[in-house]
Image (cartoon, rainbow, N blue to C red):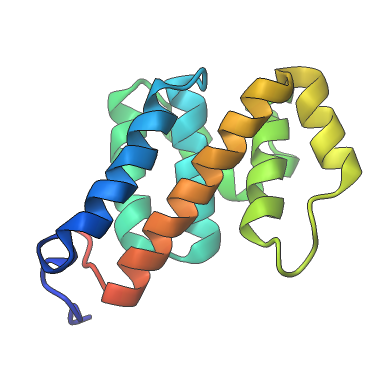
Length: 146
């Protein structure tokens, strides 16, 4: 695959600066590092963003995530490896990522609030929105995994 833009950040640095502002907010939120990596990997899988899948699985391993859980992420609903909180985060990640196909259901949202609290759910939604934006940038520019 040939990249469309060799260095998107160099082409439009102000846009990247704004994206890094969102990324900074997400990283400073109350979301556990492993949970944030699960959000980033799962949304990237759903969006088929090879660059982000490669980056975030590598980061997840560096943060102590296991190969077993990374491999099971595509089938998290059928897997015993994820906690109730992680399942709520993953369900929300899927519904927000595919929001045009189906709105976020009351069941998924209410369960997330029950397990995580309203503030953290809002932080999770912001994390999902941020990685979805990164995915769209990388896919559109055809940023190649390294």
